[in-house]
Image (cartoon, rainbow, N blue to C red; front, side, top):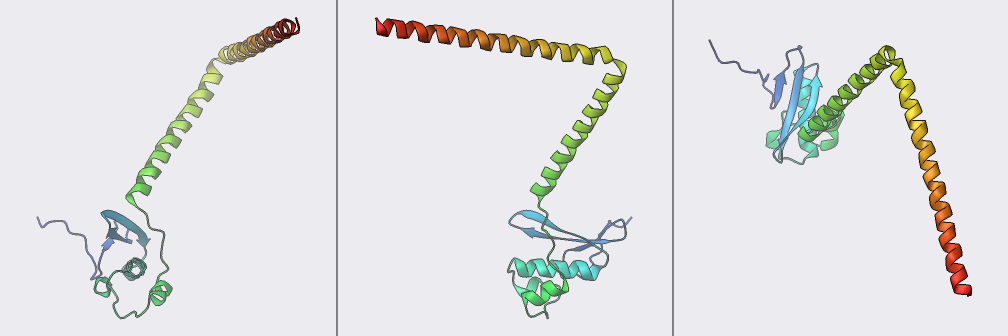
Length: 157
């Protein structure tokens, strides 16, 4: 069986996608910068060229070396947002947290349906804690006032 190779279609850094599209990426400073998915290999190659112009790489790395200026390259293919490995990691983390939050919401909804008395008990518990906290604050305030009053009496005597 021959080795599996991704077809480059004659363009530098252009690969075919399983969903009948094309993708392109650039290696820069040890990172793989994904430039996106495109409908045609030509569009992907032009996006690669626009990125190489933007990074000020030599013309020998271009797919279309006859494009004379950076502005012209960007007209042919506007520069897409560069997606780094760090962006991918952050996105994965966000999706993971979102998934956990959604599972938590579903679990809480199910819990509220099955155990409504727990919700009532929880509200009563927090109301009791608020009342206790207010009572402690009032006690501290009176204690502080007493101390200030004693200090004034000692200073005036």
